[in-house]
Length: 375
Image 1: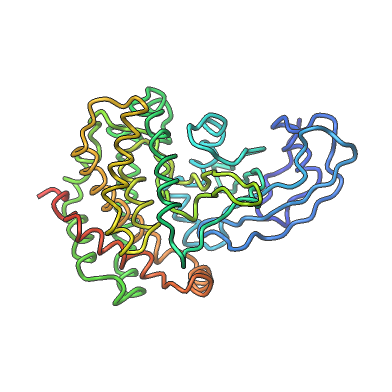
Image 2: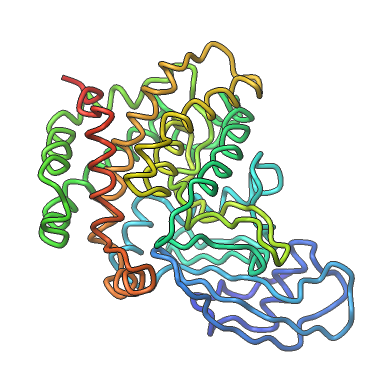
């Protein structure tokens, strides 16, 4: 089959291309798409364009999706360039191609995934999860975060020290040449983003976080050596595991599923654990229950077969994960489309600075994260 070019935007999608994509993925064999309608999903994500597509066919065929969600590269050049440098779009496409059917954690069904490696243009056709619930950031929920942790631990346990993680270069296994290249790209992105983040977020980017980021950059070679070590607890991580990357069960019959796999890699599970706790809870909630959630995660890892992993190891990994979240937030903050930030702040009545830095600063102080930066 000669495949039409990958559509770069929702408007570029055609009936013929949809037919080709769904036939290639095995969702249809005899039917053809004869009409479709497209509308943007609200709210949009920070790193991509997402649209819902309703489909009509020339004949009824069991299993043919009547609606789906299509995901495309962001038109905002700073975030698009960053995703190309860090390989984010390619990672997500490869995740669905390699792991989507058996990831160990629920994900939306993927009907099609393709990318042009030269241009970074990509498209995903995913299950329409509109019956599921997306959390309200203005009303953080301890129950939601606990549900997310309960799904996270078995996922990490499934891939704990799994040999398959070394086989895929894009996962950047610790100690691999690909990982060193990725980390050096991240160092460059962090160096460039820090001054912009300080200016953009001003008083909501606390001095303590600025100092910690500068310390991290100053000692990057030592940190690189630390992050290059495989200490027998490497697993598959989502890399940006926060509530707005998760669908939850709903009264409409929606189910739990994790999406936005642009940061998937082989790393320490503490990165995901720290991120869901610090982004999913306000400071008072986190202070009241973060240790309980860390203990829950650790106990579930052991229950699902992880061995020789002490609670102290787990707690130390969580603390280093807070540092990883700091790096992610500093890089992301000034690269996100300002219109997206404005829309999020209006929708959830929480400032971007509060979400990215103020709550994180409180967690980093509470857990004395400065100790994990090599001296």
